[in-house]
Each structure stands twice: as structure tokens, then as C-alpha cells.
Amino acid sequence: MRTAPEYLLAIYIAQHRDDPPVAPGELGEMLDRSPAAVTEMCQRLAEDGLVSYEPYDGVTLTESGREEATELHETYVTVSWFFRGVLDLDDHETEAMELAGLVSPMVAERLAATLPCDAETGRRQDAAGTGSAASDEDTV
Figure 1 (cartoon, helix red, strand yellow):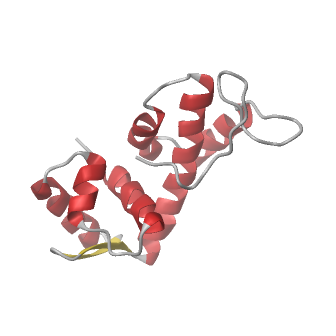
Figure 2: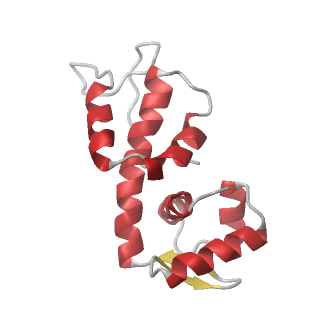
């Protein structure tokens, strides 16, 4: 089962790839959910004031939804880096997506401080010791 934070994060990522609104079908593909499940969650997020939702047209983050999603995205990027750079997981993005809503910002900050970093470039290093830059374009 996908959670509200996962949907907010997916909408945030999709809105940064393309202009809003995000089509329900795109969300369904990103999260591997049925159209009915996407509709139900979008309606719930709209009731909570986190998104504006128009059936068949799509979903857009509201200001409060964007604030929450931005914080989730920061946690997602940190957890994804940890899973890729330290644990060397192949499916680091999906795993990070599932955990982003469960990790507090304080834990994410402390986790980020433990990630290996190249002293010259300031870039995070993966498990092989090669540098690669974090990106807002991390995908689901």
C-alpha cells in the first residue's frame, strides 16, 4: 500500500519534470497503482488541503502540499544517497520513496552528515568511492 507521503513526493517529482497538473495516469505509473487507488488518494489529499485535484485533468500541489513535499524530497534524497552510496542497493530510489515519510528531518540531517564526501569536491561518494552529485532529478 502506498502512503500519502509517497504520493506527495511523486507529485513533487513529476511537477519538477513537467508543468502541473500531474495526470492521474502518470502517478499510477510512477507508484504502480491502479487508477481507482490514485483517484482515492488524490481525493483524500485534496480534502486535506495538500493538492488541488480535477478528475481526468490532474493534481497540483497546494502551497501547504508543496511545503510538505519539499521536506519529504530532502529526506528522500538523503535516504536515497545512503541506500546507494553506503548500502549499494540497486533499487535505492524505490526504497527511499517508501521510507521518506517515516524518517524525521532530524534523522535525515544526521544521516546526511554520515555520508561519505570527497574533501576536494564536496560531492557524495558511492560505495565504490567514486563521486557523484546529488540531484533533484532523482526518480521514483
